[in-house]
Image (tube, rainbow, N blue to C red; front, side, top):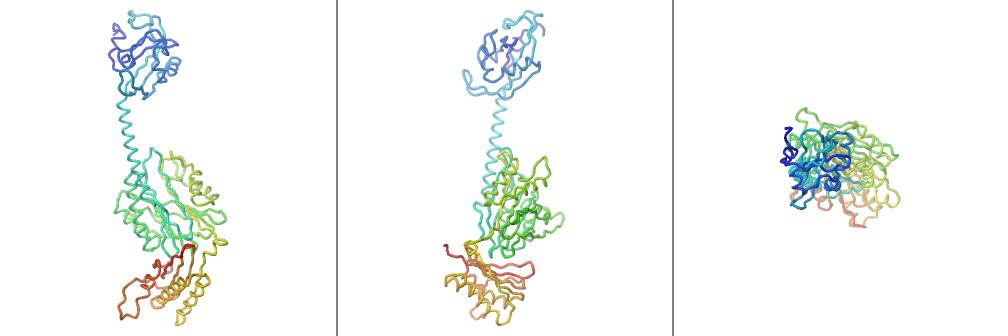
Length: 517
């Protein structure tokens, strides 16, 4: 080996090799591979003069460090642009290694300009173009898959939230950063009729198109189950069975809550989801209790049943439903994140859309955040002045007997006249109240109640009683003396429905759309 020259050792290596010496990095040698890429280089000149390509690649400061410290340094994936003899850009990883060119030994190679002992640097460049191009193709493929997942996710979320009469709502969805696969976060707002509104937020564990697809199926199922007007825990019970059928390996958390403006509260059920935060009119923020059941898709192993809870949400109050991406951090307990969110929510009393943005900023959610985030903000506004005149509520307790129906008609007529409805709408409202009361008197049990409610967009007529048998619309035969009440109501009203109440009775309601002002 001692008899071999530098050219014999390094000349046939396919990697780029250059040897420099001294503080000015004077060129001692370049091998054939280097000359093929950059052309021949004159020995003896400084690297800045003889090796301008190394200057362009930013290697000269690195060579200074190597010469001073005596330690090798490496820079990865430096691009050499296409030029003379190069049809395309190429990429090299350069390693600069400290060496010493000695004066003793065999006569130096003619190509080596250094004869005296000097400290120098050996620059070794290994081509990594194939690896870089493969990595870029992989990143492009992952980017396309992520874009497809984001597109699917957004298409499965509500394109426009339903806007209830009594609530102001806004929601936002923020996918994880560019290096994170899209998850299965979702939210929804569903108007149930009779002035009631269902609020939903959930999170499918896992990432990618599969999680988004499962999310879409669960969201569709929630909307279908919501139309049954079941209590929240029964909706989650049905959803749990469906989740296991869709994909037994996927687990999801979910909160399903129903707001009734007549009661001023949220009735909710939580399948392993984070607590709802509620801000009272005085700014106090409190959270709902622990989840009322396990995550969806897990009941088959334990036999647990979901239950419902309640939390006040009267005029002036607001609530925020959210997924774990908003509050969970790797270096902190999740309760710390929930407390930070509660502190931010306490001072956020703007429009719900503004509150969503403020919460994102307060929790430092940026485009680089590594998890999906979904937020649903709900406000039950206090109404004053002209706005308050558009919302009214009137209730009549019915005790049964032959005088109940005439009392109900007289009550409905007087209330609707005081609300200054047009004669046609007045008459339709009185007719609906009369039919619903008559149906309750015939098929229901005390206690009975007639409620008339108007909002800025609709008139709601609702009758409750103590019997839990839900009416259904049917076709009455010509000789039948009964069975036409619900059909009449369904014909004249914009919408109607019925549900069981928590006290064991039922409520039957109908709505009339008010003309636009």
